[in-house]
Length: 336
Image (cartoon, rainbow, N blue to C red):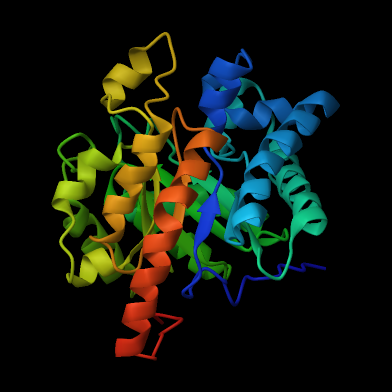
């Protein structure tokens, strides 16, 4: 029996502040010296020791959420769990099923252990792009993307995952395919685009174009949008407060580093930037995006960065919400 706790009432669609974990893959590769095939973090789940490492890694972040009385989006290790990548790494089609299930089970165990009334924990399954998120050499049509991602999303819909996130997507058609595949099995989907230093998607679209294209093609089916795998300074300048498309962005998982995607791919060492400055960079985004309430970190970030987000953002966030709340007491939960 599927017991997805929040699938039909995501608690982050409210005025509550949420955080999420930092950059999983970069932590494994650079801090733990784990050799990840194709940057696929799920590979560590094949051993008991790997599962324990993953639990301990995630617990650090959940403890920050508990400390600050904020909600938590618990992300799993399935970013590379789609059929093409898994075959490339040497896994079978049955492994696709098993790994997706196993990683959600692991999240479930953490939620059971840590969730409190003040710290709701949402289980999010991460869906990665079919190709290279930084450099979309071959682009799928909407229909191809829907058919391709339906495999993984179908498996996830049969678990306790509350939602999925299309993570580090670089062109709208693939995101539309994911949103449609998610809608077909009735699981909420978030679409997260990555951007270059100029604030545009790797395929060249502006964020506005990408969000509007996806919303139009899916009747606004994504519950909200996110930006990930880019430093906040790469996109802050393109965000226009008050625009309908910008109001659809509720979440940010930025990189610690200001480097370009190409520079990150080619770097031997991890650029963790400055955690305090990272917290301040995220605070600046609060003033641009009125619905921003879910924060985390991507490449180069760890628990220090997420804690600095809490220190820098929770105060201003609560002040803004309080003043906004006095203007209007209406909160629309669903954009159906």
